[in-house]
Length: 284
Image (cartoon, rainbow, N blue to C red):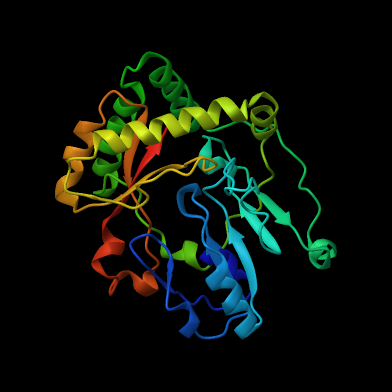
């Protein structure tokens, strides 16, 4: 996201959020050309504060729906289509080589949008193929195949870099990766996907995870699941010392527990406690 902003010669400015990931003091934020309204983990962001900010500053509101593929509002409106522009990252919901979409919901911007990139059928990485295969096995058999693969990968990474998780690359905040055509696996997924079945699976997982974590010393970011929301994962706020108990409570489910987000360098040093302790139970 930051690489995209910097590639335009623009300067990102950050606004704070509450423990429920709603904007804090947006009415006092400095003017900007555009503002991102983020549907965190597939839950609809309240757009009213962003509309008021747009009226005050003239900013274009972009609905960042990277987490919300398949998710809707209570009245059935697809997330990503509620503002002039919206984005969705399908590869974050499903394990794909790449895959995203731009929603242009205002005719004024249609002529500015680039044409659809051609699809490619290039060879997928071995790591992605292994993760996909192990995920399918774990989901169908409930054997911890993906979890074992992840454990081995992290051991290997720690031996090589000294860190179990990928180290943040500061350069990624300034530059974009080389242009990559969307892979045909995205087309195959969309042609075979059963949205209703996948929605039910994710909702059931969300409810099950919530029940298993109900007695742990953690904060549930979204305790209630609205009927039209298709959750990307189950977000919590928890001290790192509690995470092993979280993982233990979720054994046998097709999930992984990851730290989120990768904080930008500009705010990492002085970020408040909450931002450093957000985790997501990611659905496989």
